[in-house]
Length: 452
Image 1 (cartoon, rainbow, N blue to C red):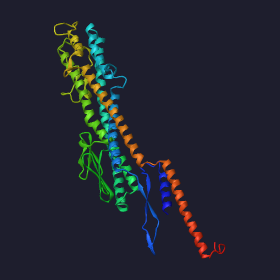
Image 2 (image 1 turned 90 degrees about the vertical axis):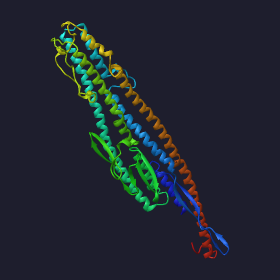
Image 3 (image 1 turned 90 degrees about the horizontal axis):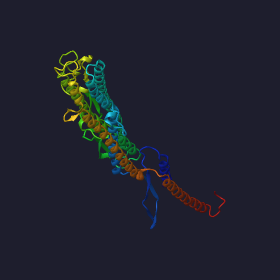
Image 4 (image 1 turned 180 degrees about the vertical axis):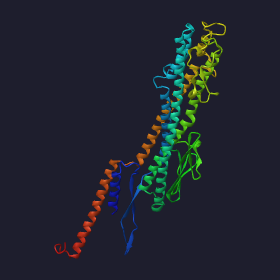
């Protein structure tokens, strides 16, 4: 019976070699109590027990590394979307090759063209065309950044749904384990629970504690309760000021700002820490260019001999400038080319407008310099996230290999065990065969043909 049980364990290992989350089982043999009859000690045989080969320390390290890797992967994915907005690639990072850089250069170059031919209507119209193109790029970039943020909001809702499904599964497995194996390793049930926890780690950062009855309590990285015994606590989302917030724990507290780890941590890092900075920089650039051009144009005289007016419509502050900036006029004569007193053929103000290309328009930086720093920051952030994700993947692979070396199924080892248990089974069967022959001879008083 013991050998048959061992054969069944081996068969189970082989059958589950490719089952996700399965932990290899080994046979533990124990001699049963002996009995003494008439001063003679007799063995009563052995028992065999299947033990799962798991290391809770290794499992938790894999779980924690899964959280870190998933966060870096989600962040990298979001930042790559931002790179695509501005046309950045690993091989082409020049500002002049991007749509925004090209539009900015073309706009200031249009004033240079106007210097040489200040009274030409077509050249004046070229300034407005360049201005409209620049505005279009600003508006489009701001809109696409908002779309990335909106997409991240939708991902948060989707991820919380996946989290709730898994926490309910883990709570159910806690209940089953408490009823069946409260003091020992629960075998297949524990495999299923650990696999569910590893999947959960892909979505959110976790802290894990072992409790009585072989249970597990799970909280988010900032302490909100997700699973306690057989009870799971669902995450919820709510919309506040156009942004999705995450509620968790028994009281439904807002845990958005403190969540780290998993896809949710990476999504929140991108949405709440990276995107606002990019949007703010884009607004500062649009506002800096717009206000400087408006101010300089107001110092000149337009084609009708009137004081210059605003070329761009802007909000009162930089906030939202990239999304709302517009060209304020469609009249090419509104471009104030001449300085006061020069007459219609003057170009002093056109020269001053062209020189804005090298003036400090955003803080202490020129428009092109600020744009280069801005795009460089996006490129560096994305490259850093990609490098970090690669490192985290390598670490996860190493930890997973260590765990699999202990818990994974080796067909070579199982084949060896199968041969050993089969030979042991045959030996035990041979003992019974010999005993059967001896008993038959005794019952038949040596007459072998009387009783088979």
